[in-house]
Every structure is written in structure tokens, then in C-alpha cells.
Length: 426
Image (cartoon, rainbow, N blue to C red; front, side, top):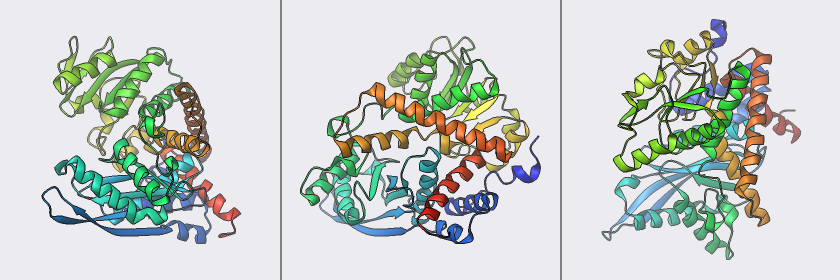
């Protein structure tokens, strides 16, 4: 049983993203007895850029959008982080996301600092040509502070490989030469990486496998339930099935399916592509998303929305471990209950770090003009994720804290140590 005083440290009370990020940093600083000067410096991004982006719309009118690029910390390397297009983007949110990217990169020990970008827009209401013009003008606006050795953007919410191709092309035109290393997550034929699409799901699957080992669960035919059958959930299911686990439940926004004897992930994906949902797959029982969370299984993977595991359902979860494919699927109160019930929670900062890890591999290849096979990429990803898992697990055991808090402390410590070596706060 974890002491209540420790449980309350796991993650801050629900507030704004930036309030949560700052509270998490405060908790890590207390555990690490962090130098106050370093703690103070880490509270603030090194640079926050706000830009106005005039775009000629298809109707001939010019509309001005507001965009941001926030660079949190560069002690461990160039800034790294995605760009999102969403009507609810705020500077405060982007600052929080940039800080979390610093910790995510540090957890898996890749030489990046955190950054994030965003544009306030509704891409669902924009044509492809409008999004292209927006992207190119945004790139021009942030071009002075990005680059392969300075800040490397990537896809995020409502941006994709096409968006990255536009950024790369615009940046290259400004420089006068082709520079694929300015972004990651590009199309393969533009310097992108084989295996990138599957990387986040693969990282989740690898964390599942290692979680069964530390819990003493036989991985062969270990039962897995996955909430969310998008990119992360689909590839996690396919790879876990290939590894030998048994997928017994999956769901999407319209509902879920369950089969005690196991579900074929490929059949579920094909059915969803044809009908719009996994619901109705032959030989499976229809269940709700809420029912999926409390199914008796070895491993539960929330890979859809945030805050789906709450104080109202946490005590009913029967899984022995939760591996967070989504960002922030577990609330503060649920964390307390899960840890009291000795459910191992592999936090999102570690579990879904496969994407940024493979982005790092893409960047290396762009800088060296090499081209790795998918087999090589997957092998290197496995090495990074497995090493990170056990480093976090070791910290968890030594600190007698949950893995979420251990991952945060490990990450902050790595950044702080780099800052000390450069003479800051020593």
C-alpha cells in the first residue's frame, strides 16, 4: 500500500495545462532537492514567439491567424516538438506542451529539448489549398528560430506528413538548398522514415511486454483491452498480436467489441474501414467504452481521450497494469485509487514516446543523408524504449514512488544535470 502522502504527489490537481506542468515540476524539484536557481529557470521557456499569419482564403478575402512557437529548454540539445492546428490553441497551452516535451525527450534519453507550436484555426473548415498557404506563411514567420540544429518541428493535432512537407519545402526555399532535417514526420519519399507511422503504437506494445515481465505475467496469451482504435491503438494491437499477446477488446468513439477467445486486429481494422466502427465485427460481443475499461484483463491500454479513467471507475478496473497510449487518460483521483490497489501504471510520458524517438532517428538520417531499413529502425526503437522502461522502473523502486512520478523525476534530473555541466546553478 502506498502512503497517502505519496499518492497525492503523483500528479497535480486538475487545473490549466500550464498550472499542471508547473506543479509537476515543483513536485520533482522537491524530490530531487533541486537547486532553486535551476528550478526557477525551468519554470519559463527560453523563447516564446507569437506571430500573425495573413492568409488569402479561397473566397479571395485575407484572414489573419495567430500562431505560436515556444522553445522550453535546450540544455540537452535542439528543441523538438509538434505543431498543432486547432481553434482552442492558446499560448499557455503551448508553453505547457513545450515543457512536457522537454521531459518526454529526457525520459527516453534522446538529445533534444522541448518545444511546441500551434496555430489558432479550424482545419476542418479549411480547404487543402488554404491549409497549404497557412502552413507556408507560418513557416516563413517562424523560420528565424527553427532549423536542423536549432528547432525541429513535427506533426501534432490536425497536422500530418503533408504539413511537414510544406514546411520543409518553404524552409528550403528560404535557405536556397534542400534541407530535410528541419522537420520530422515527413513522407518517406521526402526524407521521412520507414516505421514512423507505427512507432507510437510499437512503443506502447514494447511497454506492455516489459510490464508483464516485472509483474510476473506470462506474456504469451496475456489478455489486452484497448480503448481507442486510431493510429496508436491499431498498431499497438497488431504488434502485440504478432508478439503473442491476446487482444480481447477494442473500441472506438462509437463503441467497442469483446471476445474472450481473442480478436483479430486486422479483421477489426478492416471492419472499421468498411463500416466506420469496430462495432458489429462477427463473433464479438458489443460493449461500451466504459465497459471496456473495467473488463477483466491483464493489460489495459487507454489510447483515445484524456481523463477517461476517473475516480468513478478506477476502483472497478481489473487490469493488473495500465499502459497509457493516450496523453493524460488518468485523472489525479484515479491515480490515487490505482496505486492504492497496486495497479502498475506506465505513464504516457514513457509509454507513447515511440513517436518522438523515431523522429530522432529520422533527424539523424537527414543530417547524415543515410537511409535505414525498417528493421533497423524497429530494433533501435526497441532498445531505446526498453532501456527507458527499466530506468524509470528502477527509479520507481528506489524512490518508492509510482512510475509516473519516477519518470518525471528522472527527466527533470537529466535536464538539471546538463544545465549544471554548462555552469548554470552549480
